[in-house]
Length: 160
Picture (spheres, rainbow, N blue to C red):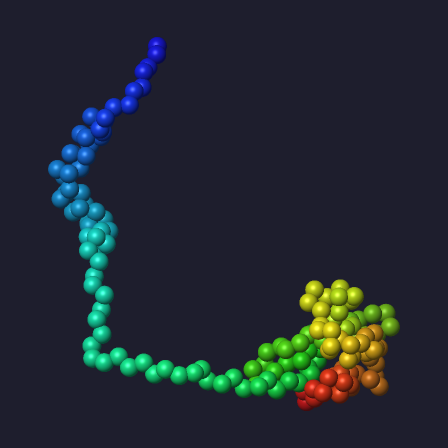
């Protein structure tokens, strides 16, 4: 059997019938929708007006509060990271390197691309402390002394 589909002008007879049925029962449909949605259906169609301000609106224009200059200190963290931090905000400024455990003992590894760091240290800072890469820490030379030496080279005091 072959069915022939052809374009007609206007909507189909079934669509017209359904549209008329919906229009005739619009009140009942709205009532049911309000009942099921606890009245939100009608409120959705009638948006509430935007609130209008009462009285004067005063805007004080001005610049933002000045941000203080960071006060940097060299810190050795509990997990062996050597970082420069801002004492006032507690935020890290630079990650200088790590203390890594090897067969020899703990060594300082400078944060450079050659040591496989994803975000290497800036060139100027790395050059200033490049000769400290691979320094072995022990009883006589600990993390506090390492932080003091790095701080002297970068003109940043260690955290006490």
